[in-house]
Image (tube, rainbow, N blue to C red; front, top):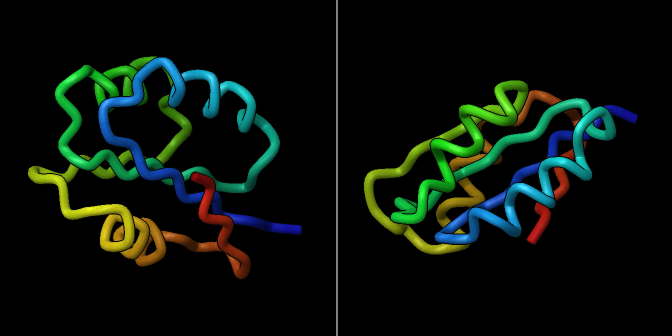
Length: 83
């Protein structure tokens, strides 16, 4: 089944790295919404997981709003919000 996975990140670089590594090849689409992290999370996604769609927010808009950004980009019929 085709699934878009949306992951919201805020200063969780090490956890995010493990999460994306576990998703590689398992999901049709992975969307990472970075909530203006200051720990290099977005750069890590861009460098190590170029297959993931990355949204870099300029400020922390909160968990719910960040999920909505990811949902807007999802192209698959099912969406999994992975927290």
